Amino acid sequence: MSRVPPVDPNAKQGPLQRGARAFTRTRFGTWFARVFVAPVEPHVIKATRGKVVIGFGFPTLNLTTRGRKSGKPRTTTLVYFTQGDDVVLIASSFGRDAHPAWYLNLKSEPHCELLSRGHGGRYVAREAGQAERERLFELAKHVYAGYQNYAEKTDRRIPVMVLSPSEHSPAA
Image (cartoon, rainbow, N blue to C red; front, side, top):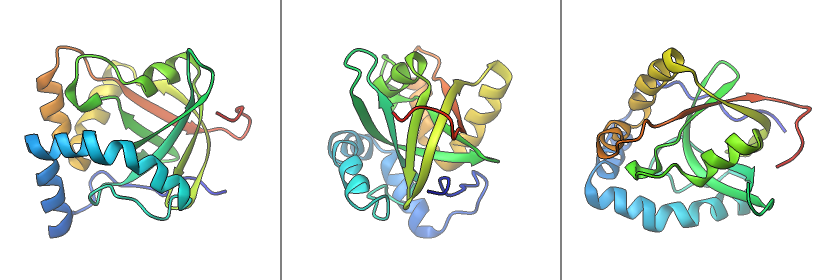
């Protein structure tokens, strides 16, 4: 299987994308994404091998990690962008005060699998350092401006994870 499709965070957005992204930045849009889209989309992506997504025009992927407590595979759908071969994920958790479970799982076991639009593979994750985090978080706001709203909603520093391809990592 090939790597996830590249996503340029500086790519120009069309009117449909801009409208969908504006909707998801509203209180209702964030609630709708968290309550309805987030629980359903991983199953849609898995069932269609990543060829169908609900993601409101956002570049999305399924991240499968190993549960840090259960040891079972855990899949979540996230917005992403790429930097070379690396995939960048923002652990925003919709601006909630607790880190998302997928982030904690990656901190415990950095080997994972990604799937987007029928492409993916095994990756290994690391948390971005201070300067890299600042640069990548700014780029992430080009993909989804709502990340700024999330950062303002919480007192925690939203982590940025960088996932690099790894043919030798164990399956999630």
